[in-house]
Length: 493
Image 1 (cartoon, helix red, strand yellow):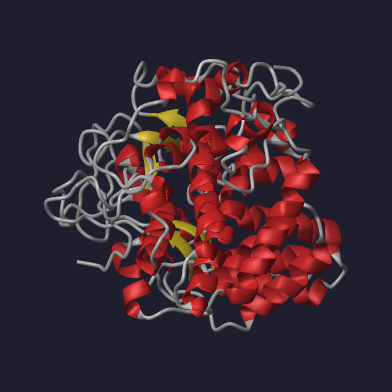
Image 2: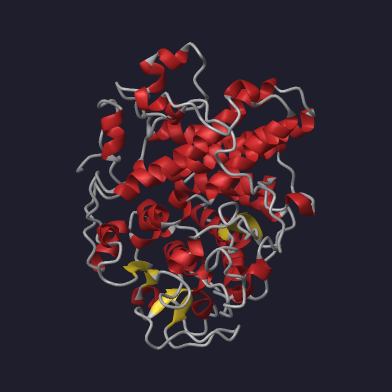
């Protein structure tokens, strides 16, 4: 059984103020006045170095929460894109059709789930950043834990700003005097630019402290490469090309490499390998099924055999792969096929295609449910190479762009590209990014938006994408209501 260093439950210590999430203030707060049972009160926590470690571990644990890896996450990041449809069977979780069709309204519950999941992570990070500096403990470890918290605060804000645009920017837990002040608790939306600026600041500070690697007992924690890679991605979305180039070249010097066999990346035996820069850790702990596993794979597994059957890869995605591209069979699991591990996919499966990156062989333990051991890949070295290629091309450095692009293509069994104009190469890199990362880390919809192609691509597939509206999702109506109208809605909703 693989090591898991943060089986601690997210609620193992009291969240000092649920209102610290931001935009969650209401006139009636009686429902908050409930004494927690079985957990330390705030003044009994954040006293020792062990408390600091537990608090940071809880941030990792939150990454696996339902709202962060299942319906809400998949609905917003993947089902909205040209890579996947809702899947499953008609009528099952029919609300996901609204994401598939891009007809989602502010009252849709998955929007609120996604919002809450990200702000739970931000709140947990802020708990650490507010309270851990006062703890008397090893200063080197303290600095590292604070850097991990900054990495995750940036990660969650990046998810929010891409999905909603400007959002409330909460950077600390309210102090005692502020907890009675509605203006301190009920924050308005910050500008998109201010949110991005804070993300960049957090990631830069985290990268200065985080180690390049860890010992086996701490495998899976955020590293320097993870902070630099996330920062490169944030700069990519802001078209800061020189920053992207410099950051990716720094990562390329940290010792990462491509896994020779693409299929191996997504097997449990391939977790945390030399291509992995950051992935959400999951494991089955016998007798404690609520501790460290996730349902990411189960939600997408073949219905009737392995899971629920959601997130059906589109035929458009199948046709995006060139002939001979080894990534096709490693990404899409077809009805009736036999996997390399010997599982025969039923000819009568409800959908013709499933996400093979979420496939876990039947011989792996199902004690807590199918696929609960499967890690979720967030950032790989291949993506760093593609970011490098895109930045180099935008800066007019064609040879550099071709070199790193071809590293990814050759690994997939394809011929290298010898020459291309800047515009041709831009489209080739975008295409390569699609097929390399498909159904994996939830970037496709947001990539189409940043590339300015969302309307063209998604309308061609019959989705109701409206320019000037659907580049972002509606602010959840529940959050607007709780804020008493302080939060404003996005245009068109």
